[in-house]
Image 1 (spheres, helix red, strand yellow):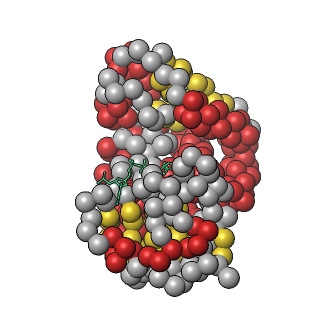
Image 2 (cartoon, protein in one colour; image 1 turned 120 degrees about the vertical axis):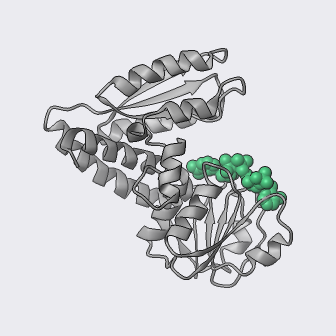
Length: 280
Ligand code: NAP
């Protein structure tokens, strides 16, 4: 019977650990804050921001939301960002994606101080992470790695196939698996013979954005399935109903990678706060 890699329970455990760590900071009279910037009125984004703010409150970090109008300019957002970068109590800053096309997303992400880049999306953080140096990592990629580590799934020497190469997910998780000594293949929309490649994988990471895209027939018996997808109707990118049985372990959707992503944003926020206030 396949093991369920339960991200929901794990995220609760991590939140409890983080709450204790935050208490040590607030006990010294400090009040760390997490700034979340959101642009426009995308319903899903607003829901995600609400979830992040609630989780932040639960661990004792005060969230502050900066809600910009759909018509806001890159310069307006950068002006707020500059103030946040200079505010000692703001230990973490993130921009909720997606943002309207007219805004220079890269410029904003890259203007977040690396020490406050708790969502791990600026180029400096990405470069350091790719080199295997200590750096903040994109939260969803880190969520996947933390699930694998905490459930003691062997990575070293395993053949991992990642489907998807986005900057926030497929690409960073591939590099993180490589840094952990997996042999990694990254697949994308131009990959030829995808089912054949996936069928050789010991670890399959699906980050495609297409419901039930990865079929059960592609999965090698005993493989570990990480389904990062989250599509309408609460379904992932893998046909888990049929594939789970073939795997040795899998992340459910919902309740796998999703809840852990918020926990990782918080963990990186607490690390930033410890560095700022406890000189860790
Ligand atoms: P994305 O930016 O749209 O990237 C999708 C990737 O899939 C691209 O690299 C694309 O290839 C590849 N792809 C598309 N069609 C393909 C095909 N037919 N064969 C092989 N590869 C194909 O998506 P994303 O932001 O990485 O998100 C991926 C999934 O993760 C989505 O379901 C999203 O909802 C979910 N997600 C979950 C969380 C969470 O916290 N749980 C967070 C973020 C995202 P090309 O590069 O060639 O276009």
